[in-house]
Length: 514
Image (tube, rainbow, N blue to C red; front, side, top):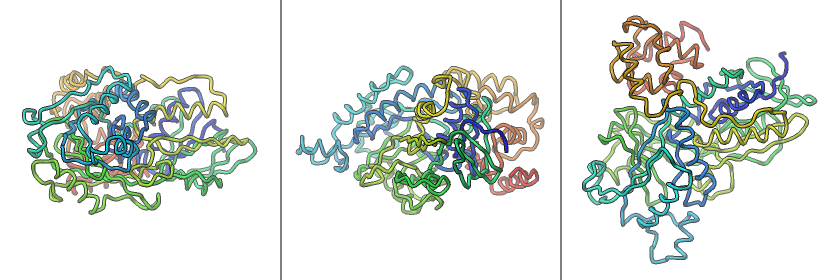
């Protein structure tokens, strides 16, 4: 058995990989074990936004909103290849009523009973004013009013929507975010183990003895960042009798054919108090989501049910000029959010904030409950504060503004990088070069190597996916299967045929990488 590491992290989602990166950068020896693919569960099934959470203001979660808003631009600077500004159009309707179960709605109903459930424009504008000013916004433009009878965003909507507000948030490629954090952690000395399930962890004096499907390990401290499995890990793997728990909430999305021609997203309000987004996706599609449904257990595979898909279709159809139907759907996906169980009455009302708890026995353990993708870096810093009370940590916070792999360029230089890549590799089409820059940033040239023609990249698997890129994903980005490549390292599964997917399966089977 190897010498003990400082920190053994269970879980390779965004929180586990974010903590691994931060800890390795502070000089701790780190091992991370993920039972499947990195980001293979919740962290690749989000709505793919760095956002403050406008609707969280209805629940008075001001600290969470402020922290999230502060993080948007910090993260944007560190990963301009996989994250970029996006404008959101919020249509107004005098008929729309809001959920009287939120704390803000109940308060407003008592103070202004004549509103009778309406969410007036001034109330929304007040929330957007807070949204613009709580987080020290510098890069992103602020809120403005739209006349939908004149603005192109109104063409896709029903004629009764004549006014809207437009505000800013940030798009992010969620699963690539996980991979890049893991890569950076590895570059700083962390050991990243995928397809390695932790089956038991027991204290042995002042060390943890950890049993996995890939061997045994010892560590001075354990981090339970198992996401939906955090409760199972706490009780089943570690053997704790703690009463702390997560509330598993399923969020489902549908991807449709492109429903509008501009590059802005929509924020739609529902009469049930829910909101959904309709977002431009992968150039030719529209992403619609999400739902909030309690989920039975972590081991039940989350799926977007027909009922959830129909809910999203009906919701969107109340806004779009034409009905959106099942025939428009090209893909569905669903993920389970491991929210801290705060006893909320509904899945929608459950807090999105994170909770970190430490058991400071001779061999300490940190448990990570909840969290959202926008605050993963701040969560990692908060985790390091707690870890620092148990282990000697010489270096302070360092990750703010430090670029992830491929992100070492200004956020407004994406087009220039794309043009340069095409100039150096003239066989690239514009769409092909743009995809590579958006995935790999300044490392795109390394993916292509010294290729002078497309044939130099090896076998063409379709949709611009070549053998050279596959080799990069296997050797540098922990990919071990077709699904890793076409749904988590990219979204090329939307474009590949079944025959092309089978060819990828054959390629991986021939290498026996699992």
